[in-house]
Image 1 (cartoon, rainbow, N blue to C red):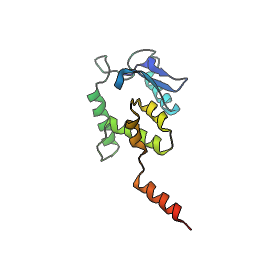
Image 2: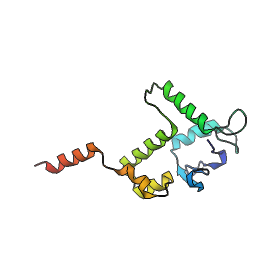
Image 3: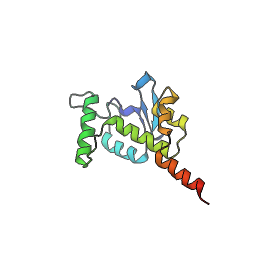
Image 4: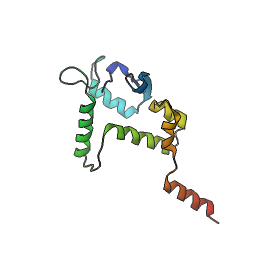
Length: 137
């Protein structure tokens, strides 16, 4: 995970993601509760990798996958969990809660709107609820 301590803006509640698809840095909002956890993790450090490896570098993608899998197992989650699933879950929740499509596109760093639109496809349950509501006498 290639996030540096200096990429966190505690005051703005944001993290700058520098090495992402398309190589365009973008600022992503974070919750204040995460800011508190990050402050505890960072301590007095002002620079360096947010999650440093024992060798002094950053965590590899594979190591992040292993950590996510271990945490899911420890939590008793039976389903296969991996980092991109967590990203997808957050994106789906934001869409379901009404985040505008262009804002979700920016949040996720999608170049093409079509990539984001899949989060806005109506769910079967939503169609059924809308039908029942429209057909009420």
